[in-house]
Structure formats: structure tokens, C-alpha cells
Picture 1 (cartoon, one colour):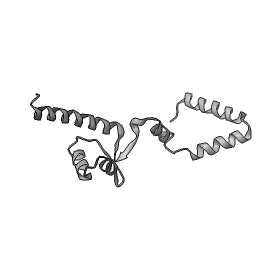
Picture 2 (picture 1 turned 135 degrees about the horizontal axis):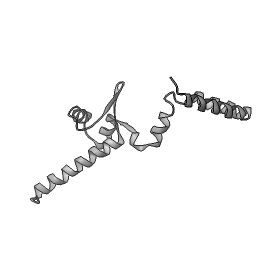
Picture 3 (picture 1 turned 120 degrees about the horizontal axis):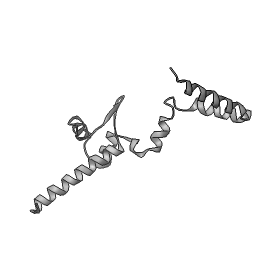
Picture 4 (picture 1 turned 90 degrees about the vertical axis):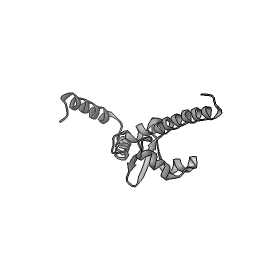
Length: 117
């Protein structure tokens, strides 16, 4: 149930819209009808790079590794990926974290091989 303040705010918004010229009202109504039903979530995703996602298959192609490797890492909990229908995706933020951690491990292993512990 909506709060009284929310209802009052909605009434104020409707009154303001009624004061607009008819062509602006029509344009606003069309924009609202075409807006994503998730109330702007798509806009928030586009604006926040940490919410951008990539398919695991695309990551595998880009880094020239087998997709099964990424799925194994996901199953082991080392890479956080999410399923959307038939597709698994990973956020760019999570991918950066994973790569950063892998890079750190590579440096340590390289140092050990050179004898620089």
C-alpha cells in the first residue's frame, strides 16, 4: 500500500503534467509507455559500468580459453557468474576482480620459478 506522502507527491506530479502544453504531455506519455517496465533499471545498467555484463562464451573467445574452463571456475566459486535463461553472464566488475587476482597469482608463480621468493 502506498504511503500518504507518495500519493500526495503523485497528485502534485499529475497537476504539473496537466500544466504542460498538450504536445509535451503526449511526448511524456509516449516516453513513459516505452520506458522499460523495470522502472529505469536499463538506464541504471547503462550508466553504471559495474553492472555491465558479458556472456561467458564471449569472455572465453576474448581470452582464448575454453568455455568449459570458465564454467569450471564458476562451479568452483572462483568466478561469480549468473544464469539468464540459457546464457551465463559475468559482470565486468567481477571479471576485473577475477583477472586481478589471477594476475597476482601469476606474478607469485613467476617469482618462485625464478627463485625470487
